[in-house]
Image 1 (cartoon, rainbow, N blue to C red):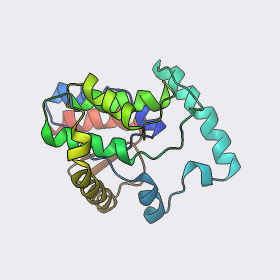
Image 2 (image 1 turned 45 degrees about the horizontal axis):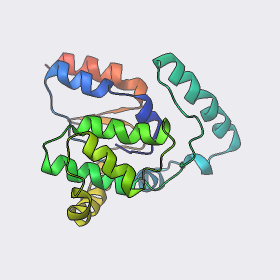
Image 3 (image 1 turned 180 degrees about the horizontal axis):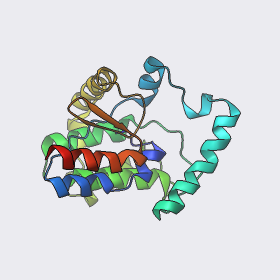
Image 4 (image 1 turned 90 degrees about the vertical axis):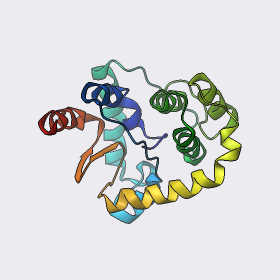
Length: 191
């Protein structure tokens, strides 16, 4: 999961609904998308050929409209450093007590709808508090969050992840918000 990924934002909370339907637990694993791109042959959006940038700019509002999701197509704080918000998700998941799925959605909304900088400490703390977490976990879990973030990045590469969102069940990788339908079918098949 990558907190600055527009396509993760566009997936909305469909993953959480699928997980509830099949009574499976989600293990959110924020990772460094730029490192994954670099090591798997991908290219960051701002480094892509202009034709790919134009297509992406057309596709984002198209997907948002299709899914009924409000979006700020050109947010003021994108690209930004997603690491601090990813560390917060890692820390929140480790301590428990709140709603991690809603925390992820809050951070994604902050970037892609509310024009907030998800690298900003106040934005992160507000998201933590509004989802049932103690905001102080950003201070106490920083080192562990950074270490886990690096480990998650390695795990993602080893699991054949090359972009975000990616959903992994066993050895099966489902890439993209448009693959949630396939994830749902796969969980139905193995349940």
